[in-house]
Length: 428
Ligand SMILES: [Zn+2]
Ligand SMILES: [Zn+2]
Image (tube, rainbow, N blue to C red; front, side):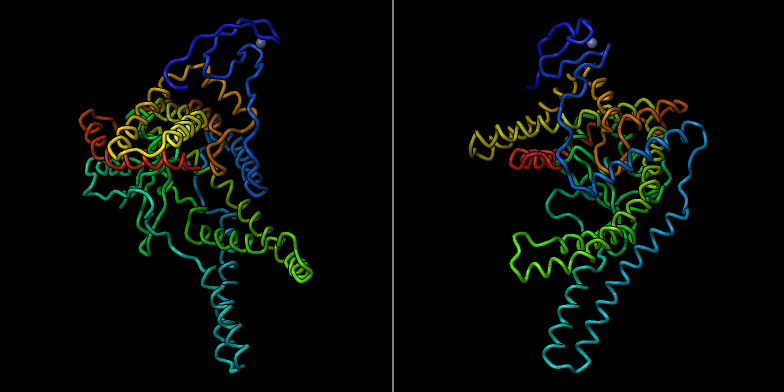
């Protein structure tokens, strides 16, 4: 599949225009959009996520119009943000009530039954209580001393977008990047997906860092402590209250008792997503704008294009993982060589994707609302927003010696991630 494809020529069955294609990609017609989106829509990921995607798309279109009209939407604490925080606090209030009830049962002197009920309530409250993220222990994590040049670049980008820098950088196998806080002191963690990082140009990497760090600068409420933890608590409730499959007579009674609480929990979840979706979408556009201000509009648009081919990149990684699985067990040295080769394969492939495939992904995205996850507006809208604004030049410019240094600093982590990718396939 990677490498270079054969050029193909055929006539469009719809309008007769000659189509030139690449044997590795879908053949489609730019004149009439024939076969522009032949793939099945993504596997159904559940009603809540579908609702979230639909909202991100609708808000994406509304806010794009606002952004392009010149009225730059400022991140602000509007009525929905206040309502979201109130709802989140109510959720945590229920957890607190369970804990208080548990202690009361223990101290009320009701004997064995009281103690059992008290302990159950306390255990439940313990599971549902908001908790801070920890540093991941299942992927490489770099600190300042491990990668001084990478941190220096992140510092510079953070300064450019007007926020503090990060304490740690985790590296994983996703075709994505993200930021979060960890620990009780709210330290900052940047997560870099190596497959995405590797296929970006140095300037596009600065755009990626600018986008991610801008989320700290803008204070996205959904990732905020109060609302983020309430979403987790509600999801746990929702999971626990699912009806039992193939119920016995007693379990049928339990299922019936679950119906009303489940509807309540679902309603609260949907409401919380609704209350935060518009602000989340606005935060994404603003983050893109800051990314363009840091790395230039051209680099930010280049980043969007790379995100458009996240699907094909994921397929390539999966097929390499399958191939590695068929190859059986190997010596450590062979495995390392193979792992390092994966990045070469991936970057060669990404560089060889023809413009007509990007254009097809853009048009297919416009039809079905392509997005890398449920919280980001569709990629083609983000791209349109960047191109619709004033073109911006870079404030942080890549330097060759620094780029090389960073590559060296990431070498060990990169090999480690490739070995995991070949063993487990790409992360969702
Ligand atoms: Zn045609
Ligand atoms: Zn984002």
